[in-house]
Length: 533
Image (cartoon, rainbow, N blue to C red; front, side):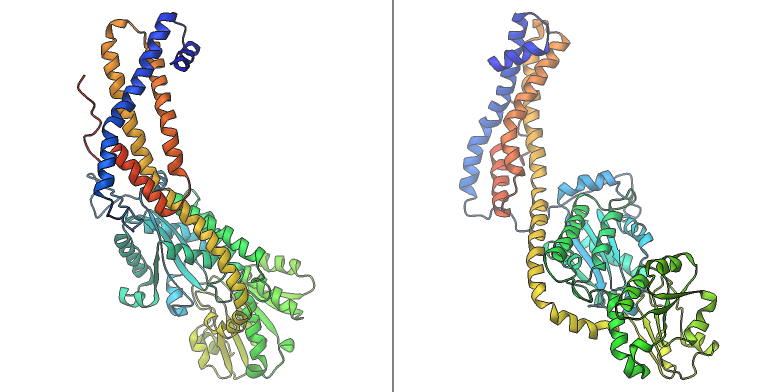
């Protein structure tokens, strides 16, 4: 009471009697509100505990239902949720899912039909969310995998919507897609993205390029036109942090750990067999001048190869590579000279973003390359740059990303020990995310608790206001009374809400939620209307 009087003295300049009267009114209002709350909650909580002692604490499913209804928009044309709505939806039971295909599950001819350039990742995720069944989405498309990470409250509807999108994009029937797709939900999806970022699911275990790609996936998802809400953006960010830990705290990334290095190892291993020529004496050419080409040159230079021809559509990027590798004799040619360069090379690597074949059997015949001279074509692009029919050309050997598995087997065997250590680190990161995700389940209860307490406060304040109608309190005095009553309610609620927000075991949190729901009868309708004044 004295604290209330002191507080009121500080906020208003009315007479002492009025201060005292108003402070007491505010205190009585707040205490009356909680008296109303506990008058019905104590007995109810005891009865509920007795009646449900033999029942389970909560359903095992961690996914609550999220109902999104709109009377103004038909089911056929549902609007895309805004970014703010997706953030709000995170606390209403969204669960993480993953669907996609990778080099472990699907051949390159299927993967290339779904490949999405990085510049279009957000366009794809927006299209996925446009149905309304998916709340958050992010796309990761690389040469070895195409995966969609999404959050939704209705797994079945969301999976149907995503599958429909994949079928439309690929032009393949759903029955064919399902043979190649993998589908993961909940903790399994979280564990998968952690392994992807850590390099444990890569063609070459521990390769570093995938971490950069997951990081780009996260950055795109949080852009203004991205579809990564609170849950998905947190997951991707945690995955990037997990990948960094794996590479800094284990030795899994040492050695040849990228698709480019595997391509170099493969061509070095098969040079004598296919070309009857030592790898160090082979004439090399690379079509394209992007990141994969830079990595190729890095690994080629590490093996002592000092002369490489780069063919590209423009001169700027090849010149940047020439400046970056001053010890390598890099000759730069434009695409007009492609067939002249191919005709003079023993090994040709292709690494462009072209969606059409750069080299195929017909083009080789038209340009006089199908003469029977031994040649190796190594395609590390998805979609493929080299047609499969080039294998029909005499003495021409064609390899794509699926053929790198021979190199992978050797590298994986050397990294088994590091994989165990890496998985232990990834489990720690996955557990942290899952604990954070479970903490969101407390938000609806916190909101209900605040609303219930505020309802009681407003009811008791209204009663007191009617009884004091003749007290001639000014508007400023009534505002101060309301602020005081609100402050007392918030102080009393702080303890229960802080306890709910604490990270603890899932079972413990479920028990706490049940007790608070029973104590305050948060799930009952019509409670808290107050006694008749």
